[in-house]
Image (tube, rainbow, N blue to C red; front, side, top):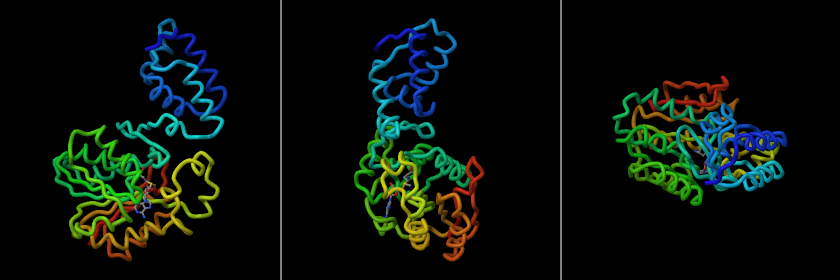
Length: 289
Ligand SMILES: C[S@@+](CC[C@H](N)C(=O)[O-])C[C@H]1O[C@@H](n2cnc3c(N)ncnc32)[C@H](O)[C@@H]1O
């Protein structure tokens, strides 16, 4: 551990933020690489006469911050870590950085399945870093989950995240196209969740460079109208869900109504468009008959 006087650190911090970037990204850098938690930061702001203990020196932290600003590379990829709900997850450019708005999917599941002792059998299609599935298996210790992805590299990261976050063995990882690795579980799932790629082609072309140049295209692009994958997932869901089983989908800000119509067409009931914290209809949920 390296000791730095509080005043020196605060001066350095101000200088870094004056170059650009946002406070949240800076906090990720300080926490993941510097070993400085938000608690440490608060304490040193209150008492700058104290010392701060760092895992890496300020020059090293500054070099990463400069790289982040210069290349627009997400700080999470440079640090190899992100925070999501109460999880600390490994991320590389093989997986999408799980977004704060997606955290709400777990709360939607909590509102449907209220007892944490429930023996849920769930599938998460397109798990990426594993965030959603890991959160669910931790919250429902008697559940069994299967997390799938088309990308084997992503699954390896998800598996590492699971091992780092949990002592249990109630989550399995299968590779393949949407439902296809789950052929032997037809009619068995209480719940299926997906945050599939849903960005329409023309929107994808205009994405900010920190997203388009660094995050995997396979995790973002949803075909011409953005609904290519959502359509496929909904059409096959009735084969895999139990009667009255739930499907929870994340969608683009303006797709809720279209996703609802797709669910109706495929005989889902109890359909609801759930808003995220910004009031956007971000999730569409339904029950198979
Ligand atoms: C938007 S990301 C979501 C990742 C993670 N679930 C999350 O919420 O952060 C979509 C994920 O779907 C995966 N994916 C894309 N096409 C797929 C397909 N045809 N079958 C299965 N998974 C796919 C991607 O590799 C990516 O990990």
